[in-house]
Structures are given as C-alpha cells and as structure tokens.
Amino acid sequence: MLRKSLMLVYALGAYILSMVALVYIMGFLIDFGVPKGISGAGAKDGESFAPWPAIIINTGLIALFGLHHSITARTSFKRCWTRIIPAPIERATYLYMTVAITALLIGFWQPIPITIWHVQSSLAAGFIYAGYISIWAMMVAATFHFGHFGFLGLAQAWQNFRNIKSAPANMTARYLYALVRHPISLGWMVAPFLTPHFTVGHLVFAGATLAYILLATPFEEADLIEEIGEPYRDYRDRVPAFVPFAKRPPVKTVPQRKF
Image 1 (cartoon, rainbow, N blue to C red):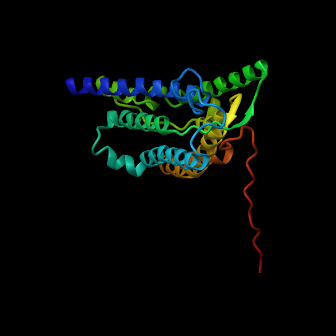
Image 2: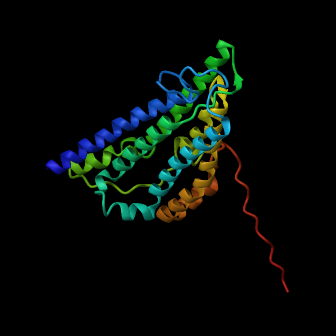
Image 3: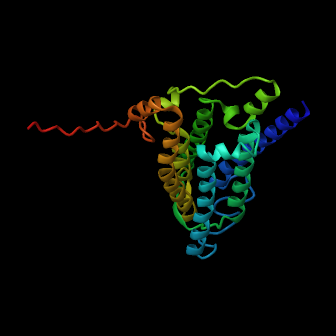
C-alpha cells in the first residue's frame, strides 16, 4: 500500500508541475507575468544576441523538445519504457521529463526582440489577447475529451491506488475532435501568432513549432492506426487534420482498361 501511495504522490507532483509549466508557457509567449518572456525581460527592440546564433540555438531547443515528445510517444518506446518504469507512473514520468525540457527551453532561450508588428490600439490588442486566451482554453478543453487526468498522468496512479482496472480506450470523434483531428496541435500552431507585439523570436518559435507538428503528425497517426485500426482510418478520411470544415479530397480511382 505504501508503494501505491508513493506512486500517487509522485503522479500528483507531475500533475502540479505540468500545470505550472503550462501557465508559465502561456505567459512566456506573450511576455506577461513571468520573469523571462520570449522577448526577454526588459529587452529593447533589437537588443539581443546576434540574430543568427540565437535563431540556431532557439531552433535547437524546440527540436530537443519535439524529439523528446516524438520518441517517448512511440508505441515501441513505451513497450520498452514500461519494463523499467511501472505502468501507473509511466505517464507521470514522461511529464516530469517534459517539465525539465520546458525549463531548459525557457532558461536557454535567446531573445530576439526585433519587431515584426506591434499593435498600438488598446481595443485591437484586447481582441488579440482574447483570442490567445480562447486558444489555450480550447487546448485544455481538448484534454477532457479523452480524459484530462489520464492525459496528465494522475488517473493511472489513482486507479492503481484504488485497485481499479482501467477501461480500454474507445475511439470517439465528438466536440472539438469532430472538427479537426488534432485540436491541441492546432492550438500550438496558432497561439504564438496571437500577440500584439510579434518579434523575430516569436517567428522562430512559431516556425519551428509548425515544422515539428507537420513532420511529427504522420508518425503519430501511424501509431494510432496500429493501435486502433480501421476506425481511425475512417476517422482520418472524414475529418481534416488542422483546418475545420476543410473538405477532404475525394479518393481518386484509376479506371481499368478492358482488353
């Protein structure tokens, strides 16, 4: 019982730290309420490292974050990983790693506060901030579709503590997932642009994140097809990946010649 209690405390710590990291990233991307924002605390326009070294460092940091997510999310990795880490805290351990890499990204991020656009109107800026908050609210809401506490590693430890056998995951396509297949990824693609003061640093973050998502999504979907099978293939054919209401192109068939 003590072992299960420690696992639950371990998972609770991962949940709390993940929420703290999430809130920090929200402030980081708009330079609000955090010690270090994406453009640097107190930095003046254009005052930073030389742009190209900073771009290389920042792109590398995002690539590190992406590699961590991609490698540890693969089914083959999880099979090996759960031989070392007990299944009830596998997700929590992943989250501790994610928080650590997030801290590295923020700590070593090189501000490039060269302005691309700066919205001066208070009203327009207010609308942009409202859109920014809405995107993050959408991303958090998307986690409840398949289990918010399971997504953040707490449900697994709680079920283990209570000796409850977890139910197998079901394939459902409702709410946000009826509009796009990847609402959380869509949020990450859009959020960096929703700031009144958009800098080269924002552009690097947005561009590198977009590139990672576009490269990683096919591998993620291949795992889902392996795990779920034909229901996910059908879902993929019906629902667009990122653009709501986008029409899926019809499958072209080559007419057979008769001899």
